[in-house]
Length: 185
Image (cartoon, rainbow, N blue to C red; front, top):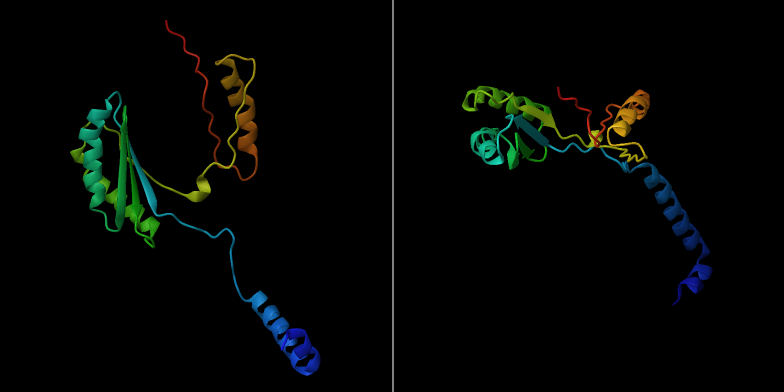
């Protein structure tokens, strides 16, 4: 028995099934709440500490290892990764899924303040910052011109950055590249 012959032989049944499918489709069309861009909060923090003029080895031994040990004591820490470079220590902390990020940030800052005496006296206060998906750059703009490496950044700083910063919804505009003018006497 094929479908077209059965549909013609039983028109009431065919009409009822068709109406049932259409009604279920219309009802279910309004039900699901699917967000194509849901608010996802990554439970990730970054701890940046600076020790002016120190080599990566010294930063690793005197700063990064201590901060790693302090961060490991914070509840909910799932993963710690660190990077030591000249004069800077970056420690990234990922918390377990579902961890309240505001509470985790406060706890992390409190632990770092308690253990701050363990770090060398020349070390600046560690800066804790949340990794926020909404704060990632939306526009990355490259500019080139026949101006020199000193004049172009000055022009970009004075003209382009100012106009971008005044646009509504813009939180921060960073300029990189080129050289800063330096006069030695």
